[in-house]
Image (cartoon, rainbow, N blue to C red):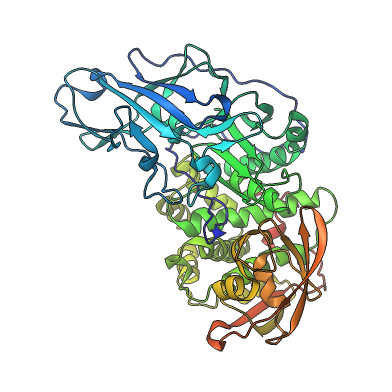
Length: 579
């Protein structure tokens, strides 16, 4: 799961069931551009599966889906009393639940609760796709997206879960479509349909229309890069990044199962986000992520690593994945030349800056959202530092935890069980999770032997004040400086990318408060932006802000001074270190 977009946009990671752990890969493969290949469809699993047939209303640019669902009596049982078919997605903008988009064929509301019939349960319903244009409030990865040539769809948009008398059942499901061309990670859906486990088809991504694809085989798993917007040549340029990240992760954390996985890419001017449903990933934004340090590049690296790194608590799932993402970004940059320790630490210190944004927060254990990303990453760094001093590493412990609880990641209980094998490690983890703000990052950096960073105290802004009252914007991404929406009369417009404020470069919106540190109310501030790809110079007048909305911030920056060895654990992937 990647960073939330504030305040009305988000990227969430869907849950996926555990599968048996395959054999592990002894080492990450070398960087290579793969050649295309094709996946093979699976054979029928059993007679009389649950069946779902989908017709598109409006063709490839569908506005709705007509669905016919049959649950065989033998999948329900003669003694059953209640059958529930709930949709698993999150609520969407201006709606209380996803089921608000679903209407029974007779025009009645879809409740998802039905008395168990004596025979087969047969339903007909319609799923409206109006939210494909509106954008989500939650669940960026579960929203239909219209591409230039068709529709991107996730199974959760039209396939409900199955519960019988409160018991969730994952039964065989046969999926068929109407006359449209539909492709998933295995290839085109045959006219006879696709038969797989219910959950796998519910969590799969589908591309409707003549979509492009490019297959990247890595360590026994195929990642199918697919898009209805980008062509195959553009997708091929992403392949080296996918190959390197997935190859390294396979070496450090163990191989994934062999089933193909879709990486779907969508063009969107104002949303920049990503997410995972099941084993499949979506990345939304412009441009395509060919550089690991770009906004969409960071999203791609993060979501790829979620194939190995997901858990049942935010600090472990999102924070540790963010930490592994930093290591992967440093390694990818190192492939094109030397990366100094100060560069790696600078990325980590940006997470400290993000943590400083939160004016109301507690210990990392108790927080969620963007604090869990940044706070969890700092916990991971400090814990990794202690483990490496003891001759181990965070990768070693995480790999062991995954063996206890395989794909797609681990659980807090499994991670703690693996960590308990290292004397004193659990106590260290708990002390980091329970540390009151400010987080003791400086102590951890000192433990690595790295030069102490420069520390600057300055007056910042709380996040809402900075955005709405100072900049006049109402929506933006914390992972970039792109503006998603602006107030009426604002200096800025949706789609603007801020590049500089008052002579200071701005890479992320939160850096604006550092750039404004020495300005005074009434002062005119010069801003450089990109609008529609063209550079522009703007000005705005700084308003007066109540001191209670201007908390003290701490800014850390890595020193230029270097040391021999560069022993920071952040450089482990770049140097090929593996424990």
